[in-house]
Image 1 (cartoon, rainbow, N blue to C red):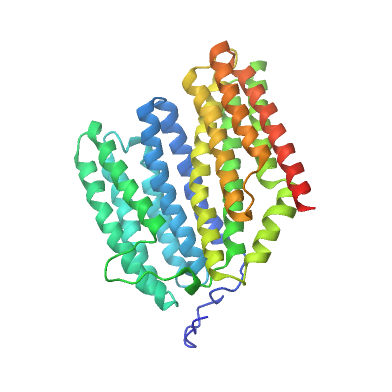
Image 2: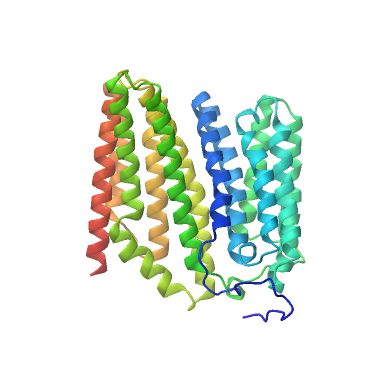
Length: 398
């Protein structure tokens, strides 16, 4: 482990030492829960292929910022008293960025792009001044180079007309994602090996879990607000209750007893401290996977809101795709994470769930089922998957 300067008195926890998730980190996450509501609103108002692509670009971008800042927080920002002001600064700028999501593809592109670039370029430059790991201090120069390159299509897209903006911004988002995936390589500049970083894996896993719980809480708020507008209609209330049951099923899938005892707990306890490279790889996998889960949660929330608004009406194919597609995204992301992290090639219950969800979506469209019938079908599939996965996890642990 790299030595820590003795004069650095504001370093509370050394790199690699386990620490609890701080209250400031959870406070920071609330800004991005707000982003989920804005992304859902944008998709709900633009439930088309183009609207879905716009939502995809903004979601990957916004939660790319969240993922990178979360990683930085585990490495540096939550460990230093002085650096926490930087995290608060990202919160303030991020609030402006997230508030502009629903107007970014209309007449307010700069309110989205300017805060985004300020964070992407400014955060690594400022974090570089307080990091204790020499390799990471150098690596933040690489991050600035990549952010500067992606700034070109972000700026051009903001200057372009609304029709062509999507192409430019999709290219910019792709550059940002590629940089994260490749760890921002720059010719002539070093890229630190993952074995050079002492990373707190349990902290990062817990951080991702808590953020997912907050996302589920936002979904409950959305469902509750939809019920408020139809308290005099029993069918609306019933649709709201079935939506909540789906959310409970998602919670049981990700946080059921077998998952906590037989999957995540052994994973973090075995990896932490033994293999720094494995710790970093698993942390990156969990953090990036969270971006995919957010996409699923946004789509699921939009589909549920359509159903609660008109539960007796035949559900539109676009809403069916949002509802079942969102669940497929969540389950597939979870399956991929478990397959990569546990070394098991197949989790039968999760693969079966994807197949059933796709078939159920097709039946719902062809049969012209009502919204509440479709939501009831989703409750059955979600509950069965949660039960099957928890059972499978217990059996595999024996």
